[in-house]
Image (tube, rainbow, N blue to C red):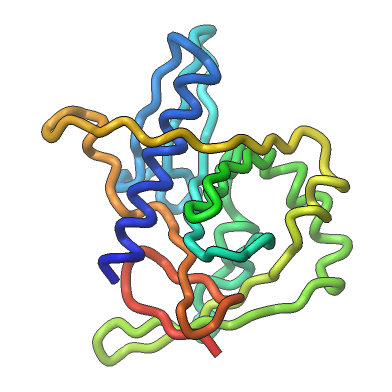
Length: 201
């Protein structure tokens, strides 16, 4: 679980650094633990110099060979809870391929609009999460990076720089591991959150 938690932390650091570099003078607010934003699927608020505020969802993926996104469609199959890809109110999904050193900025509403009519074209994968005596199933679609890049305008891919260390105790150090991290040592296509340990099928 520590590896997954670390992946989520690194993804948030990379996301924050890219946002600040993209818009000098902007500010990034970590709202991962704020109940007002948790149910909206928003991890960061990006406050632009103009005053505009954009919602950001962060995903971290540490698989070495993956060139596919995992779009979470059902977060809890047993309770029929929709996945963050479907309900997130974020303007951007920053999908960070940690091992490959890439950050993909996906305009989430456009990606969702593109994906839904062709959802049946992509395989669904299951992952299992254990929290004490409770076990639940997460379901997502595995979508090649190239398909999204070719079908959705506005997708940006950037090579990552080494993240700048965050000073303990500073506001930026509040970037916790609550942003989703994808990691599945036993099932290369299934994601794992930063919380309870998941094993895929």
